[in-house]
Length: 399
Ligand code: ADP
Image (cartoon, rainbow, N blue to C red; front, side, top):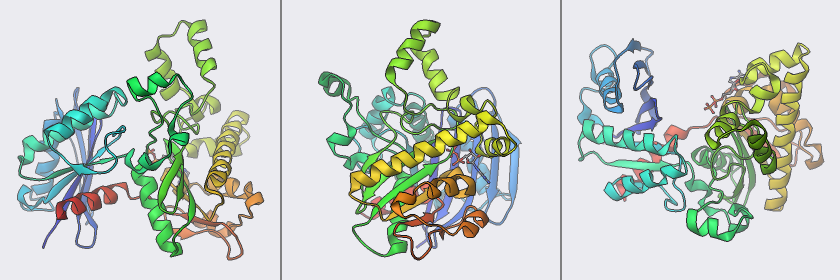
């Protein structure tokens, strides 16, 4: 039987999509609609390389849906004859809070709960709901829809890892705790790593390093800790996000500069991280280039980021009672030999040894970097979040 799953990642002004044929898990077409609201632009590409790009008015997510669905079914850029060929839809959802411990089928109550969790993810959850509603409008309510949460993989963390040492009533009243993010990516790469090693009971540290960066401790397939917190701002410094900072520094600055919470949030999320330290860019490639050309702040930014990655790997090795493997994924993890090389060399106390030549020459490919005598195995595993969403969607259909 033909099974084609549409995967949707709806943001506030953008919508990414992939149509995956589950027979062989092949991507048939993918694309992005952005500038939803004030404008509208679509970029669509098919597996056989046909590309379509155009400005199309998209006042709401509904028009974005119409635009990519007509590309998908049209003569020139189409990959299916009609929308009836879409078996089901899987949606990426950033925040599932304490409610959604796993992926589930969409119904009205699920939509309401995702909307209510918008308080914890104001930039994301409301946009996901717009995506789900636009999808129902376009495909009708007969096509099953599934929601897959960035937080679910972290739902197994014990309270000692997810609680903040704040007055307890803030946890009971507002559910303020660590939820983590990038869970679908950590789940995919840790599962794939265990498959490659072919053993159970592994202690794996997964490093998702992209514009957003997070590290997870995965013990025997179960996440026991992660670096992101209530929101994806915590943990490692990132492209434009600060990562963990002494909370007093933030209060002090708000007072000194007369900043509102919204202004401070903007600074912490968009004007901090590698961009702020390097003064060059939020992009790892530009920062490496500047650092190697002698720019001291760019070098400091690299040093800080690498140091933080190494510290969390060490902390999570202790949390798991040992370390069997490290996985690098995300734009930086998959592509930057510089970051992987520096981090692995600084992990000498764990005996980590990698093949430097292989590391230098590998970009965006699944590869084992560690040498045969390294007690800790090191892998690059390109993440496949959309495929995981499609797999979950299919699994729920079969239940
Ligand atoms: P997002 O978190 O938005 O999904 P990505 O996972 O695409 O981001 O990662 C973006 C980061 O990956 C950027 O900092 C970019 O510089 C880095 N990156 C992408 N390609 C390379 C490369 N060839 N070498 C080094 N860094 C790269």
